[in-house]
Length: 117
Image (cartoon, helix red, strand yellow):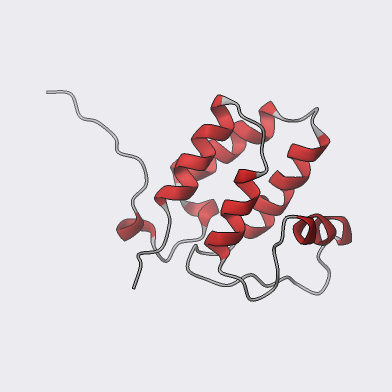
């Protein structure tokens, strides 16, 4: 009997940073590779890369030396300090153009949504 691999689940990955979830990480890498020539998509993916160091239920915070261009683009996406990381990540993926790689990244991002209380 063949086994199947399921995509990420909130319960299993709730406390893990996005970058440590294999399915999310693979989808992100594919989107980055696909959009190398698109500066707008690359900027949104740069913000997602920075956010990926945090877990979906955490809040947005930046280190003192964070790249100023990335901070500016985060602001254009409506991402602010203290905002839930999952909402910020959703804003990043929503800003990406339609493409199978970005559809996969949207799906993996949505799969990591924190459970509603």
